Image (cartoon, rainbow over all chains, first blue to last red; front, side, top):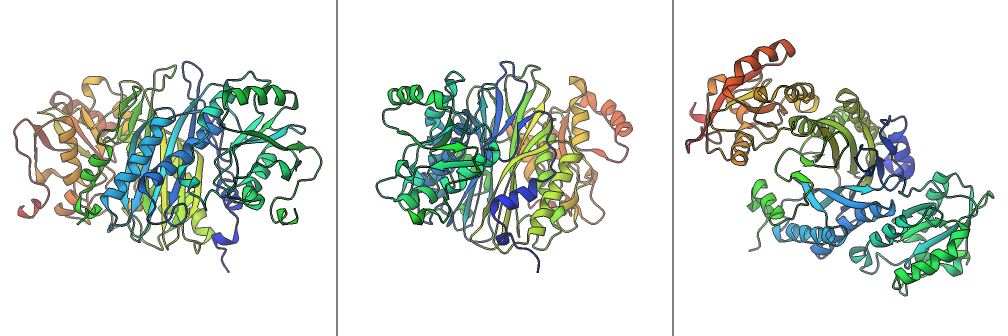
Length: 303
Length: 303
């Protein structure tokens, strides 16, 4: 029988689709990281970040959700990816497709929420878009974004080294059960500050936690070529309305996951606390060169 | 009763959504043209073009269509917009959303078609993307693209002047009834050549014909602030499988619509014929400062 997309996991499907694709010489980072990084020959040497993402009704938001929050979420998901690279959002393109029964007020609400997010995180512009009709009931908001990042000061998923500490911002879990997945604030200011640190204090790798620690940490380890990691479950910062299982597997946290050089951790921790007294930065484990990874999927039930 | 999106025309909806939106200082051209034009402070002064567009199953392509052609169309629609500004496509971001019953081979076919288009028109890269599942049967391919254009050599919809001649490339009509809407070649090489001409020979305004002459010419006139235009129906180049009505109203032609300074037309026409012997460039009318526009919508039945 012919293979259906459900027979493949998303990562496997993407790997098949992007296999053998050619990247031009100006592409510093291609598919697989939070954003693509492009050398656009700017006069000040800054690099261009590119990212696209979408939210779909009944998948990423429930029908009847506050439209302004839906727009906020759609925009903030992409801001979160730009931030995770250490970048600043610059321009957004918005494609919306929806059934013909949709109320104008709902679509206007999406836009209000999107614009609110653009003002809060870098004050950037929506420079274009597309509206289209869906033949079935439903709605999709697809947003593409450019960002800017100083050359050689961007974060990737691939820089972690064995021995680096693993840290996360904020608290994890329960995002979708609560309203946090609609109201979260991407860690733009925190990530920009991290990017401004001297190189020996900066994270070696960083990404945003969108699919949950259980999926995202192995991706970071794989892309960094680090075989193992050890997580101390007692250290994981859990939201009061969630539990360990949720903190590991729920996803939609939009917190930063990063790896830190051991030598930097104490200084960084102190400076962080002064800079961001309301946002925890918690070391939860360590990257390792042993072929051993703390089981995160289907593993946490044992603890 | 609350207003539904079907109560508004697309242009009116977009006008409402983008009203009052703030554009940052680096935006040379914002929403409303084929692409946004951004001053990204490149060392050679070239500008960044940004565009997004999407194709939806049962709207832009029929279920069961050759997937490679669907991917080709999705990519070429955006290339056509970059070309209409005189630009060169540089990078694409691809978001695809589809139901879980979809065959992997179909999704792979879309990607083959998209990649083929990137190789033919500027040899650029797909640098990122997103795959998502739709809760209902269907598929959507949303593509964003960056492009590059030399400073002060880009075309807009807003530069036409009264007295300019109106010209189109190729032949119009019947695109959707035939397979042309899936197999068309965007006028990238033609538009690049036009962009390379001395300023007095270059079109004063240009756009691609995606919604048909009847919708697109009034948009160009409105944005240029030119009140009138006169079209000579006998001059409109019609595809052999279409008729005048189709050539005016069908849309999906992806030909270039441009306005030319009268003094340039003869020289330009001769040079064009040498450069592109297989693609007609036809003068079909004239922009005018009279408050009178040849009726194109619901008007062509009279002829």
